[in-house]
Length: 131
Image 1 (cartoon, helix red, strand yellow):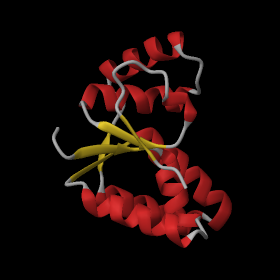
Image 2 (image 1 turned 60 degrees about the horizontal axis):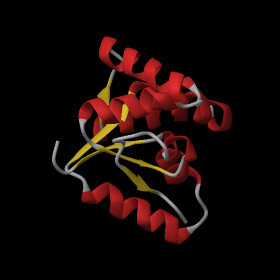
Image 3 (image 1 turned 180 degrees about the vertical axis):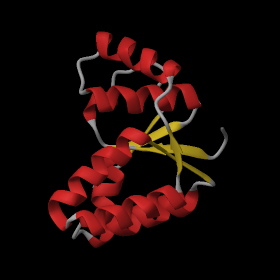
Image 4 (image 1 turned 90 degrees about the horizontal axis):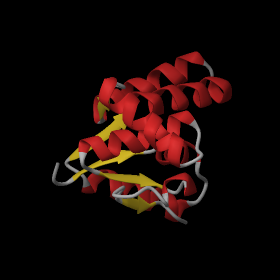
């Protein structure tokens, strides 16, 4: 997909909780840049879990609803599940990260992240979110 990008969990964590005004500005600009913003359903799981611990269920529900409105949620299907397992077999990483990487590869879009787990995955295009 041209001008599309998959967003890793870190994008949302930093968007919600950073106190660094320069980083917040960079993330807002990134959001505006893409026509098609994608997110893995596992990222929704991770964000919901983080927010529910920090701010409670009401805020977690609100934030996940906003993500669902502003991003196309990609569910884990057979193709993503098997590609994820292959990636995890070749690159030690948490399951959620392997699903996110597999989703990016299958969707043919870049991944916005700053997670080192993704650096050595062949054919995975990344845009690094660094401070």
